[in-house]
Image 1 (cartoon, one colour):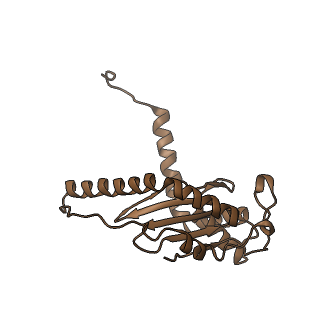
Image 2 (spheres, one colour):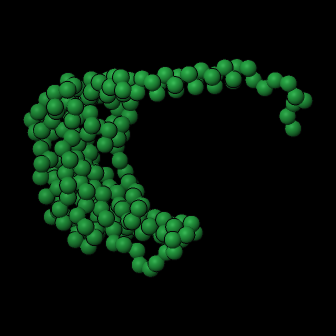
Image 3 (cartoon, one colour):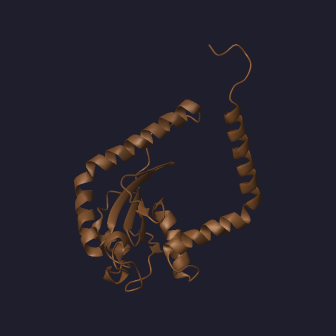
Amino acid sequence: MSGRMHRGWHGAGGRGRGPGRGGWQQADLPGAEDAAAWLHGRLPDEWFAAAPDITVDREEILIVGQLPPLDGEFPDTEAGRADRASAEAGRISRFRETTREERIEIARQAEHRYQRKVAWGARVGDTVELFTVASVPVMTRLRQPERIVLDTLVDSGVARSRSDALAWAVRLVGQHADEWLTELRDAMAKVDELRAKGPTGGEGTA
């Protein structure tokens, strides 16, 4: 069982942030290039039906595993689809509860080895649930996929830091969505105007 690992940091020994409010010094962080391989050997073979997705950045290791498919057929009706979604959620809930103690121990070992928090998730069919994921403040609170986008901009030299990358992304959206943003502001102004006028005429409300 192997996993995909997405590099969302500046590499072992690269530049980074200081301790305290900013987190770990990047030079203090051990490399996590072997995290997927280590977890491949550490995770029980019977947990997942396929290799889990393993995503790593400077703060977090996220493990999302595919659970065995559900038995039985569900009719392709609104009620059948709802029943399937409920059954998938129940399967994930069962996995979460029955593996809790072992997942805590694996997370403790991985956190000690890689100095990153470990988060878990599971997938059955179209249902995906994440159990515990970190939100890290970077001018706002962002989850791992957004942090990886910022780190890619830093790694490529487009931005000097995550904050600079976030500002760059905002500028890019502003440049390419100017017409849409203008329409949005106009719509907001109309809403404010209507709200200020309030209801007029009539005999009141029941």
